[in-house]
Amino acid sequence: MHVEVPAVPYKELRGKDQGTGSAEMRQRVEAARAVQQHRGFYNARIPSPQLRKLCALDEAGERTLEMAVRRMGLSARAHDRILKVARTIADLDHAENIVAKHLAEAVQYRSLDRNYWS
Image (cartoon, rainbow, N blue to C red):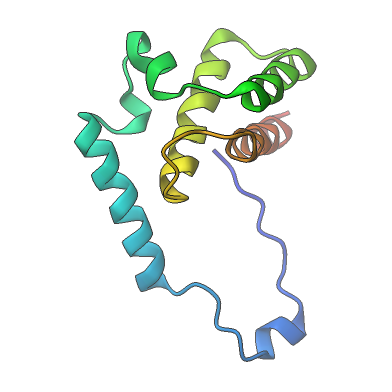
């Protein structure tokens, strides 16, 4: 997975807002990993038979994923990987269910990955 990180504008660098610190980010990641451990495995290792259950989508999520699969010509493997990344994004967001915004972010990472290697 690749994430594009744009340059931070000078005024933001010099501003008073410190953003999210490393310690806070570490806590969020540890909390998400604990949720995954409670499920019995980390998201990257979700067994195929359980993927649809653990990554259940609402109607908006289904539309978002279907559009991405069609427009990007994604394989079944890519479809499953997007679901796993979206599950992780939802975990970091403290969300029990994956929603369209989690899928959109996961698809965006996939798009960046494809652009990087093309």
